[in-house]
Length: 197
Image 1: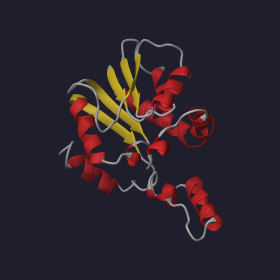
Image 2 (image 1 turned 90 degrees about the horizontal axis):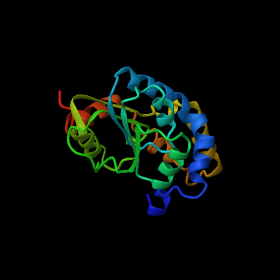
Image 3 (image 1 turned 60 degrees about the vertical axis):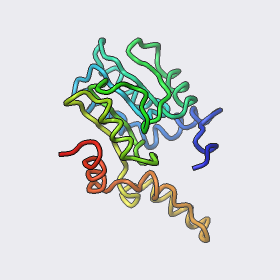
Image 4 (image 1 turned 60 degrees about the horizontal axis):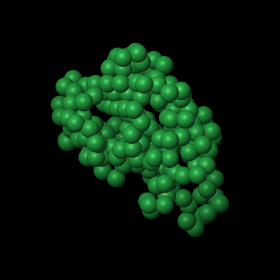
């Protein structure tokens, strides 16, 4: 991915939030927020927060004394996410790479990430980093999409693009967002470096 492709600037964060979030992220964000809140973390870290859909779903479910650090690799996305919530002393917004977290060891009760791990160049490194910043007994919750064939919307888009570009069909959706749904692979990646059984 080129450096230009990684930068979500201008109207991209707003359009991402306006069109993609309701279509493919909102319901999953609500689910993840319920799962996170059920563990009653006092200190939590969100990585790859994007436009803040999980942040918005979760903040109302946290106790008044919680500390919630929200991170993303892209500062314009974080800036936009911050505008979508009233000022809340529990939230710390910080630009950070999930593969190189700028936090001390054993800082958080919980680390969460919605649909971000599939985009990481080195998932095992990110898993080690999540483990490093977790307190003993802490939890790491993340979500990934299943194979593209299990997602009607993404599969239909991919098929339509293949018809439009038969000589060079775009396979990004199948390869990246929907290319990391094999639970055996995920378990293996987690167990090796970061969360051994």
